[in-house]
Length: 140
Image (cartoon, rainbow, N blue to C red; front, side):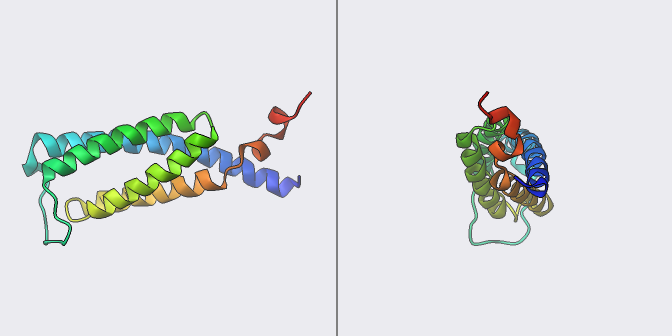
């Protein structure tokens, strides 16, 4: 393996670890956002009318469930297991969709979360744990 490939994989591994931290953080923040939407509908103000209008209490429950799943997948991603990497990509994609639909209620926050989810998908997709740490997987 070339030195350049090893450096790229180490960067991807570090970014994937960062992605796990981001997923846990996003999950906790979505949990709090869901609690705010369920507890008091007046916290969020709807701007213009959109085609996909859902009650804020429903959005609150969606964000509560999604936040819990995102945080759990983020914790599992620390292991680097293949299933957790696949789950992280899928849950980040679902989070992008949910936050796109959340744009009318809280646009700046939704755009920020969408950007972070894109970084998570990139980091997890480019990381190959076997190449990042070749000494750890070599048979002795």
